[in-house]
Image (cartoon, rainbow, N blue to C red; front, side, top):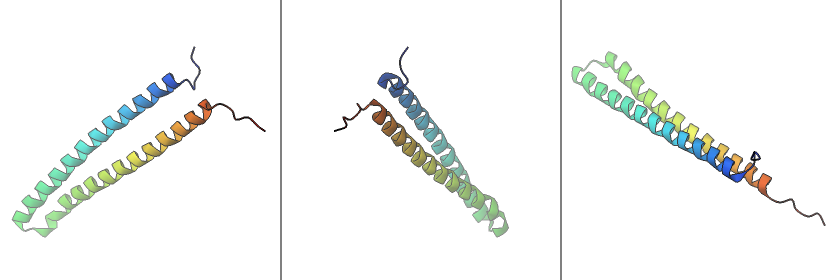
Length: 101
């Protein structure tokens, strides 16, 4: 049985997390693009009707898409911070103890 701090085990776990983060980022990016396109198409349709009261729905769609992109940015920033913290912890556990003079 391999110890928890073994580099091969830790490396494979980090690789799996990186892959999951990339997949989630791609999925959320596609969803946000779809919401942006839907919002823009709806803005064009409503603007042709010249009815200002109906602009609430496309405005909310565009605001939702913006919030999705902001949320994705926060998720990526936090996941990078967690990855760096985990790497620092792994490096400190694998480093040999320093001799005390």
